[in-house]
Image 1 (cartoon, rainbow, N blue to C red):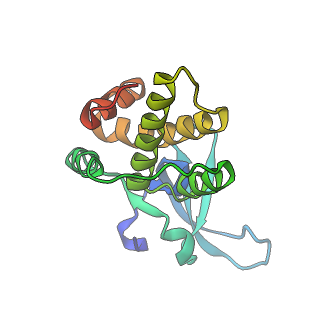
Image 2 (cartoon, rainbow, N blue to C red; image 1 turned 90 degrees about the vertical axis):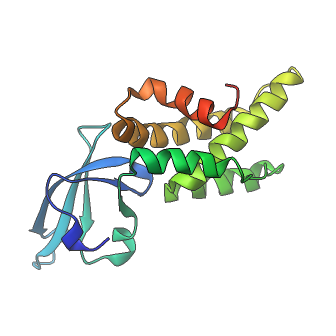
Image 3 (tube, rainbow, N blue to C red; image 1 turned 180 degrees about the horizontal axis):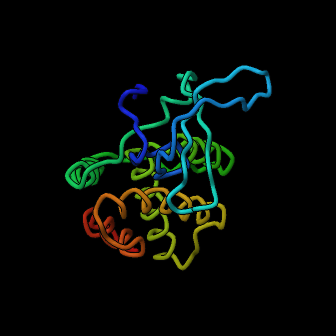
Length: 174
């Protein structure tokens, strides 16, 4: 996403930070080098006190910026994810690393697959009278928060209705 596509007032998704408002694009000296460089000033939609500064010239960071998905894209994404499976890594350490990577990248397709994978594991464990490990439950909550922010914004529904919407499209139990 190049600079020209981003203007003040636009809403974007920034990596694992969720939906952000482009509050400004202005030259700043954040490195205290005496040199001004242009920055995107982003305000997180779900944490109004949180402001992020992304250097316009840092292509690696700017690659993490993308436009908010549309209603149709969200529906398509959910339906497509039904045909894919993310395998549950049995090793706790491997699982923690893989899930952390998915959370940091903040890519919706991966988040949806991970959420579905955890839902399915949770159901399987409940059927055997067991509970999902706390670490996995935390990952699930964080992933749901990331997805809910964008889906709530794009679908125009309250955040607390998003997971029910996702489950109904994916046809999975809570």
